[in-house]
Length: 48
Image 1 (cartoon, rainbow, N blue to C red):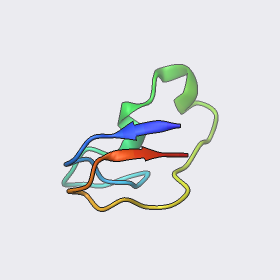
Image 2: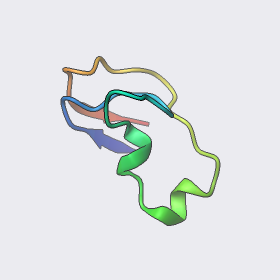
Image 3: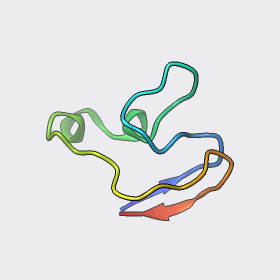
Image 4: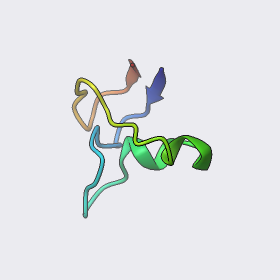
């Protein structure tokens, strides 16, 4: 579970904005995780 702050994009990559993948610690980035579901960029909250 991750708490996504407003202003962060729910995506693996984005050239313009910070993504939820950038919020993960390095040891989790290597596990080929990806976001399931989507919150708008301006919305904050938890998702799995």
